[in-house]
Every structure is written in structure tokens, then in C-alpha cells.
Length: 278
Image (cartoon, rainbow, N blue to C red; front, top):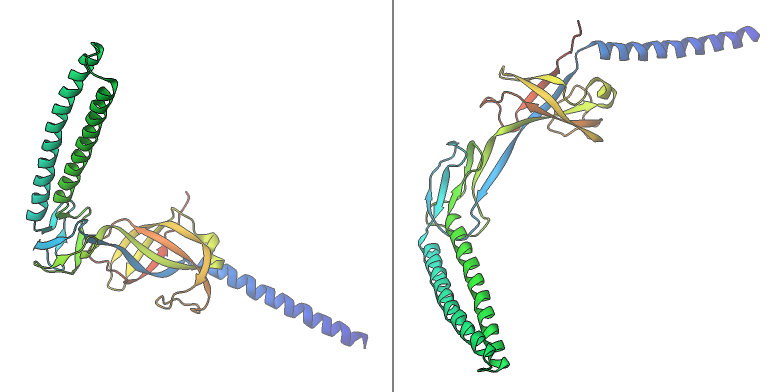
């Protein structure tokens, strides 16, 4: 009976040892292999829209055209906005002329008040009238600036270089403020979204160099930027050797030398570049 108990204990010890050895070997094998991740290209997109409403007069680009920063890509009919600016300038001149007369009247009453030739109430009325017209001049000046800004905004300028993805409208269309006119894929920055299993968290850190490969043979250098502190389920669009239901951590990798070979959503392979010490 005692021998049987010893045998059972021995079998359990051997089983535990075998399990520990297998787990340890799996971890060592995992660490010894270069870390390879899978993800997708994430190119930032920009929607261009006018800040003022109007009738679309010109669309300078087609889908697929390159866009340079600072280039006018579309414009509105400027006549209504130019007319509004002319009206505001006329109102400003009118207010300025009224202010000149109010200033002269106030100065006359000021000198007469010192000689006791006018009442205090007349002086107060002239002062209030002058200040009221000054306020109107300030308002008219602000309206001129606003009208000039609206006129300037009738030209739509791309703030960044990129490629036109979508040309939404055509000349002649009446657009509202904020309505999308173009959708542009930006040249910079190009990111790769990749996903990391929890056991591999200790093998990667922000700033680490990586190599990004596409299925078509493209090779790019990159650098790990952001490592999410929160675990999430692997997105269904990402093919990984492990089960898609595993919890993973999202990485954002900046591509150092992007070109037209990287397209939005393209699947890529990310290999860690081992830092070798002499």
C-alpha cells in the first residue's frame, strides 16, 4: 500500500515537472524567435469644406490627383461675398463721418460748458451721442473684417499634401458651410496598427525600431510610437497565428519612409529589429 502511494506521488511529481518543463520550453522558444506582428496600414484622411455657404464655382482636382499644401482646390462664386464686403465698408464710412460730426459737437459744447453757456444736460447728451457713434464705428469695423474673412474663405485651400480620394461635389452645386467637398489621403503621417499578445509585452517598447513588409514585397522602416494600456479583442480584419478571440494590445507604428506603395487598410507584417550590443 505504501509503495502504491509513493508511486502515485512520484507520477504526480513527474507530471508537474513535465508540465513545467513544457511551459518553460514554450516560453524560451517564444523569446528566442524574432517577434513578428500583423496589422494594417492606417493613413490619415482629411475632409475639406468651406467655412461659408455659397455656389460652387470651380473644382480644380479630380480623384487620384496629387494635392500640394497651400494649393487652392476649389472656389465659390465670390460676387455675393464681395457685395457684402462693399456694403460693410460703406456702413463703416458712414459711421466714421457721423463720428467726426459728433466729435466736433462735443468739443463745442465742452468749451461752452466751461463758459457756462450750455447746461450740463446738453453736455452729457453730446458725450453720450459721441460714445454711441464710437461704438457703431467699432461694430462697423468688425463687420468689415468679418466680410473680408468670408470673402477669403471662398477659396478652399489644402493645408497638407496628399492624394484626392473623393471628389464629392461639382461646380454649380450650392454648398452649406462645413459640407464636405473633397476627401484627401494625407502623405504624412502613415501609421501601422498592429496587435501584440500579452506574453510579448515585455519584448517591445516605445521607440523600438521595426521593419514593415507588405505582401507585394515593399519594405519600410518604422518605429513603435504608442502601446495601448488597455487590452482588447483582436479585430476580425487582422490575421494572426493565434486565435482571434485572444486579448491583445494595440500598437501604433510610425512608418519612416512611406510612399505610394502603402495604401489605406493594407495588411502588413511587422518584424522587430533586434538591438545588438557589441
